[in-house]
Image (spheres, rainbow, N blue to C red):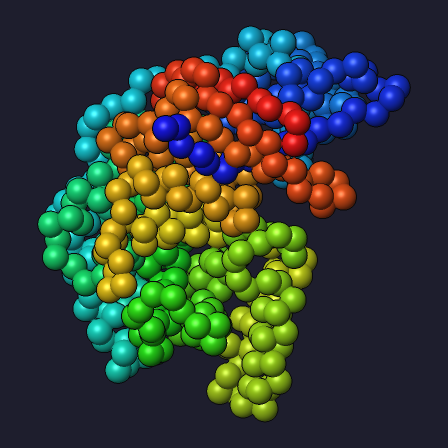
Length: 437
């Protein structure tokens, strides 16, 4: 029997009078993927090879054979909302640019990873009794820097296996340390592979971003050390609400440490809210609730001069949530890496699941948990690498696809995988849609 999965599909309509008025959206328009390889090819050739449309079929950017760097950079402004091109012109874009075969080289250094997990075990025990401090942070920084540099040193860094599950299977680490180590390594691989660099300055900036994400991954769940966590299945409502406090507890454990950059604190505070907004969402906390909770702490601390550093940091966090939400991509990476790490780790109330099963479970819940970019980057850049290059969706599988229109109405459609073509770290699928939804 074929399997069913949930996925996503943009539901596109066309207005009368625009250039795309006679097109069938499911056949004639395709969403543009903002891969660094393709954007770089545009820059090298000073060209925008096709017209780009919005989801209503209206032209946003015209093709050009003499495009400037600024013209090409304008494409990035539409990454969040989505930009489309005619499927018939896919050959002009060169989506296969830079694609190479997957490698079976194992990229994760066992010694460095096990050392990281042992250090995590020691730290988690230590902070149950004593506050986290700068010395802890500097020690963690050395460990994650070693793993990062070792990973990037391989010529097959982009295509090899992220074999962290194999490494941790024999490490004998406690559950919390195992999840922390897996999450940090997976987040690292995803961040490195999605952030191509073309200059030395790019490389230096990306290195800081990579280190900050890995540090945030390490610190994300330290709040559990101050909580009495339930260790059984079928949680009651009040137990679930109690667990939801852990991101803000983790944040307050690091908020007063100058050694940590603002982005680390923001990612930790928000890492269970990867899908921005108040629409359909299974994640927590929502912006309004989180901001209200932070403001209540401001009122509580405002007369305590010893809390000035934390007060200023809380103000920065509130401003970022309300105005810009600067680190949403990293928050999404940390969240999805953490879900995979948790699913593949045995817990007191359940056994671990196989990595391919974990990929299926994450996809099934994806519409209600992750934005499209987070989901696509995860499966494109690390999905196969985490499963020994075995595709998790096969020809003949059915996919239930959820979409949402501009009126927030949700549609469900069914398609079947007709053919697949492996390339790079992802698998391309050709589908047949049933549009009678």
